[in-house]
Length: 140
Image (cartoon, rainbow, N blue to C red; front, side, top):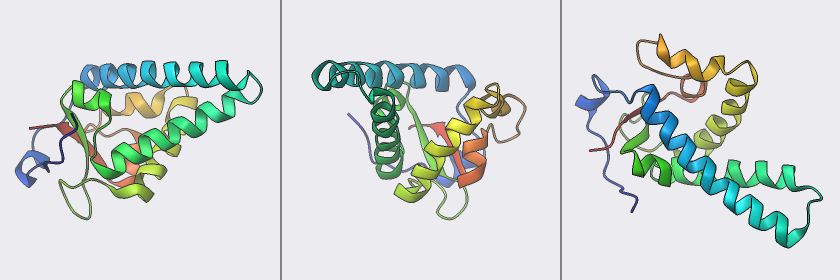
């Protein structure tokens, strides 16, 4: 079950979620999205399936990260995307969540450099985190 408990500001100054926890959450979400896309392709036919899959993925991440800061995969891995800039510890809202989802495509297209950026960034932010002012923290 997704939790709506916010992260305290003190956790924003110290704890960040690491690469492998974030990778596992993305893998879980990817499997769930793959199943949904597969079902839709079977029902609707294969024409236009890729575009529909992208729209579904953008909607999925926008909804969950915008509303609670936590997708089902994030919840399983006990992590949360939170605001680092305007209202620390709170969900980033739908507009910034959509921007983050769109920028995550760019992060992946450039040889995954945008995702790997967190490995040497002090705040463990990816490019899509930096663009919208978010961080990924352990959910408590």
